[in-house]
Amino acid sequence: MKSIIITGASSGIGHATAKVFLDAGWRVGLIARRADRLEALADQYDTAVPLPADVSDANGMQAAFEAFGHIDVLFNNAGLFGPSATIDEITLEDWAQVMQVNIGGMFIAARLAFMKMRAQDPQGGRIINNGSLSAHVPRPNSVCYTTTKHAVTGLTKTLSLDGRSFNIACGQIDIGNAETDLLRQLKASQPGTETMDVGNAARSVLHMAEMPTEANVQFMTVMATRMPYIGRG
Image 1 (tube, rainbow, N blue to C red):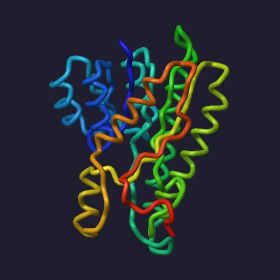
Image 2 (image 1 turned 180 degrees about the vertical axis):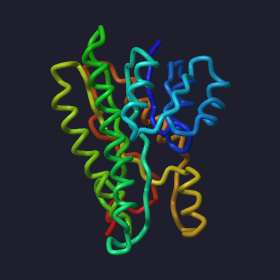
Image 3 (image 1 turned 45 degrees about the horizontal axis):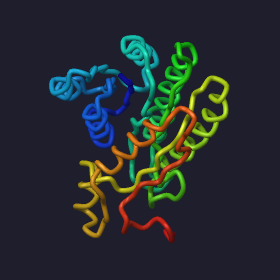
């Protein structure tokens, strides 16, 4: 049975992706802070393993990875948007929090996955980082989030390069306007916002994860067809 750890699995894209993998017969490690939501999902599937942890807590994350065991894939998904404001209106505390989760948390999870994949037999695995259209072009008033998502692209490229010798592949999915609770709130305040069902993003992650070991989706963009991206700006 193939195995995957998904961070940010209690809601949004992470939760939808976890269900798609569970329905496909994978063993799924569920990482998020809200243990009750992870337990509720695990109650529905025998192959779901709740691993409550904060992605920015290195010790808690290490314990979660050790408890899960063998890992074929990491979906490095957890993140937060942070304040929507211009840079002069953002506190250093808010900036630090977004950096801690979106970069620090992704680094911690990738480091643990890489370490385990390098040491296990057979050696190797796959890391899929959740980027964003903001890894390419920003929304207005998104300096914290956009900065981190550009950093995620650098992480993806470096892991792809450094992982080759150990049969560790790394790819990035850049998702635009998947309809989660967060996007529904945005749509309520901006009625013209174009969205797509979050299941489209989740199934795209499954496609990346199910590639044979000799192949890798390096970058994938999946987005609502009518949202502004090409020609944005």
